[in-house]
Length: 243
Image (cartoon, rainbow, N blue to C red):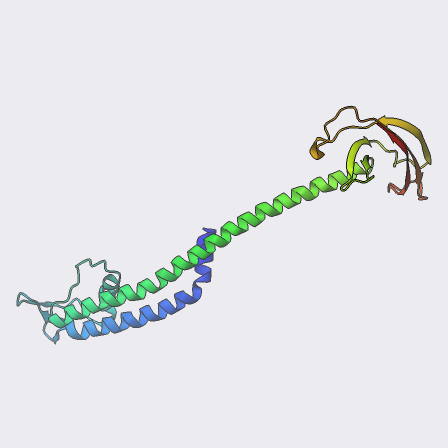
């Protein structure tokens, strides 16, 4: 329903043009068929009478121009109920012409609606794609925000060999997942030896990669006692790597 509503909203100008063209064509056809098939006024019958093809006089179904609108609409749409038909040759010619005019008048808005529907359908599919992409980006933003929160207490150290190597060769990595950055006091973490771990994503799959000696000092910034912000200076000391 939403797509159909968009189609009609975008085609509103065409509907106005169609309404004007259809009204003019209907009035012209109704007027011509009335004057041709209306017959003669019979004072005794108090009705418009016409001579049928069988030679019998009968009341004309085209009593007035408004009475002829029904026949025009049925003829324009090529339905042809047969309840009201012209009897004269000229009336049948007007009927044939009305059929052709009706097809032309109705074909114009149908073609425009068809084209507009195709455009709206592609726009709708593009909106769905953009919405899906937007949701995916939102999820990535949430994941990134969570990573940022987790990374506040996370430290990752990678050891590279830059000597006569380009690009530098990754020798191993180690990490800490619980840095005391929520502490309001200065913390001195003594130098200690840690094992280097492989990184399969970068092609480093060896298990025994050696040791690295690392230490750090956390110096919090000076804030109020009830301040929940994490701020300070983290000084990392990388002493040596062996392997």
